[in-house]
Length: 244
Image (cartoon, rainbow, N blue to C red; front, side, top):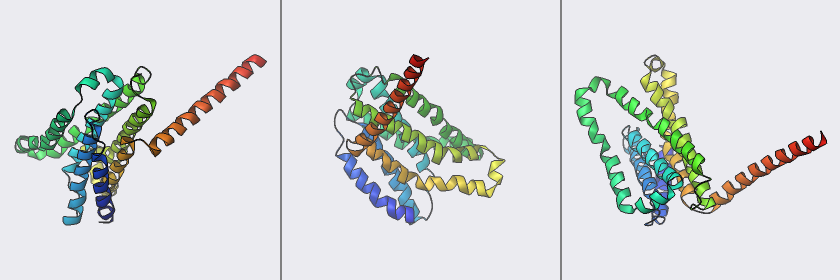
């Protein structure tokens, strides 16, 4: 209840703020807005039902994959994506994600005794995808000259954050759902279930990477510190070599 009481008003404020960032050529906020709406569904279920809305996990992970894909395309395929991204396409993608649970119905009737395992296997698929999007983005950074440096930093930051949220909050629960032996231990069940309640609060940090400001200064300072460290190391190596 405490998480819901804190998270619900913050999520509503974040949605209103992100709505102002939606433009014809900047559709990423649309996916973040839908992710936050799924958070509202979970937070509301905590208040009304006193429990977590399990179906929201599918929505959340699907929108995280979509966000990572969109951020990857901006860097890896900037020219192609420049002419393909538009609000209409983004809305269609979001509608498809929201309608995705309809697929549960035939699966539930055909394999209702194994439905939890099937869902867990599906929720495991984003793991290699998120790693691929981050790795592909890092690889394509140098060639994406049409993307400003500050936007590159925000994109990489968003991809890293999404991967961390999935690995730390969702992946342990997915692994436990797939393992019958681990599921026998109640303590492990509780440990992997609790992080899911904090996922709405973690999603709020995506707002930081959707707009310019403090995030740019922080990421720029981190990059500068790394570059200074690398330059210092190179100079020390050069001096040593000259001395020899």
